[in-house]
Length: 332
Image 1: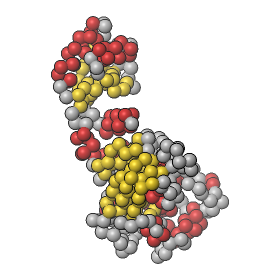
Image 2: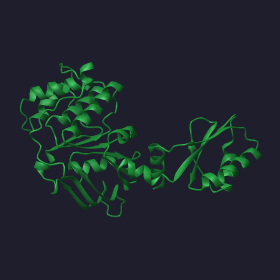
Image 3: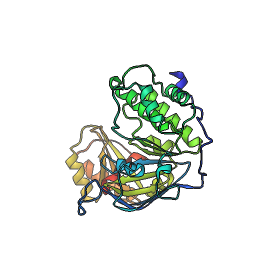
Image 4: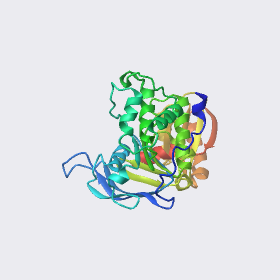
């Protein structure tokens, strides 16, 4: 497995057709739905954004936010109801969509084929030089055996590896991955991370639908956050954090369990918001805006003490991407 943890070598960089200054994905006022009823609320509503060639965009959102639907529109599996979608400056055609590598959730697999047979089947759709060598190289990178075992007998993790390998066979310029770490163990997840870094280093574009916020923090050039089919944020991590820099989370730890209704009543009197229980029944976080930190903290502590609260500690907790994700997705 040790060989799979090194950054894989490039397969073929000669096929690059687009410079890093090009807009790889351009979407304007896009709406999409799975229903033919015109009055049905679209799954995606009025999306507009652009992603440059050679960048990684983390596509974030809760379940049902519209992430997979957006990927389906980009691949042509779903036609938008309204708006425009361009790949490398033009309306998608066969040539442009052949430059895309896709791994979506719940893909169909041919259960009776072996991994090698399956990859050869899809590889023949593209003009791939030395297809056997490409398959062997990617299988080694992902630590996937190419024996004669039927895909139907694969573990979920190995089936996921197979889909990721299939999406990379033709050295695509644009990679669309939907939850690539699904069913993968920690070592395989590290391989995925290294593959993403390799793709970006080669000037490829990656649109990554994921629930793993560490990808957004470590690797993403841009973040697209969807909620209920609408764009809640699009920009850099720095810009996202800057939008929320005026607020803080006050963390209060109680020596003994505290009735949450008493806490809520005290907060209501001061027009403050309970962010969420921390998972520890003795620790709570309260969102404070601007001058509230100085003005309302003493008042809150006084009210809690009056309710016989045994406070062990009070401190500020730096807000993280997860806090902002919860706030933006719950506000839609």
